[in-house]
Image 1: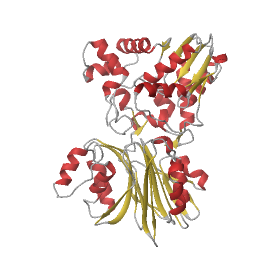
Image 2: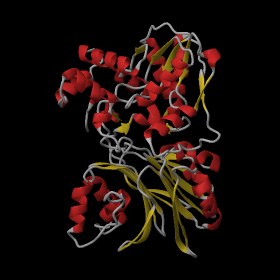
Image 3: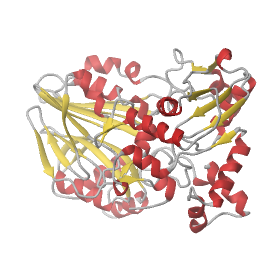
Length: 469
């Protein structure tokens, strides 16, 4: 994934951009950057690798040395950004969040005009550079942004820093959010709505699908009205969103409580306590405990003081060891206990299997697993959270192939998406057996939609049921 923050203020904006960007650190693990503009000194930019170091540590010197009244910052899992561009529009900095599926064809089309791109490691093109190139094909920023959103297969939201204003543009179907904050002497834009509250801003508006606004210290001007169709990513509430954020009027933490409550209402398993995987399953587990009457407890704790970011050793054996070393058991809450454990989802299943083994080794009598979302059957086409893994790595797809005796076609996969069908039950039972759980029950998609309170046709559920736009 990724996240961004931008601010336009009468006074220096660097403090706001520094901390506003830092509040998005949960959305990315590899790259981060800041770009600012000052009438006196022009543009300034910095990008750092944050794989093993927090954003604040990497950008401490920039927070003191940079100056400007407008700026943008980002956290990214992939591309180095923001990038600084000089074009017929003048100089500008740009950062993006999203995914481009048709980048190869777009790059070929642009290269036909005798231009060039910088290649990243592996031969890929920085998607933010590609978006800038698409924008530059039109005569002005607004036409360029709209053109980019129209031709991109996938999803793209962006912030563009120019000497006159910051342009904030939400992707065409609103799969990712942009929230606008306001304070005396300034406006800001953020992926996460909570990111500006401690900086003195208050909520001004949330951009609608495809909406474009221009921010200055004095104004937030709508340049393109929002579209009527929306497909916001449901996984923002399930996993990616920070608990204090709100999307489309629905708070992340309370939505997760409701998911847990609905999980409990469909369940009758006998357990001694309910626990959540730190940190993504905690809110779901609280909701489950509230609805079931079962005590909520923390039978193991994630050790975080020296693990602010995930250290990545060079081989898989050591990576597994490091992951296990973070978990510290509380044996008094584990030994001879029947545990019900909730995580946000099961993707490959490896980590949850190791956690279950860890609990058994610590004396657990039973470990019942209740994921906070339905089985993931399709790799995401619209955001980049699953871009690095193929659908064949999903445990559901591996199990389905095993049950079918061959690689399944789309029609067969859809049969396994029906929570009331016999094939769905066989898939769940096989996953339960493979991962060593005492029992397994997934959250239902209709309950996810109910928990969100949004109309079903406004929420993207592709990764669970394969339904496209």
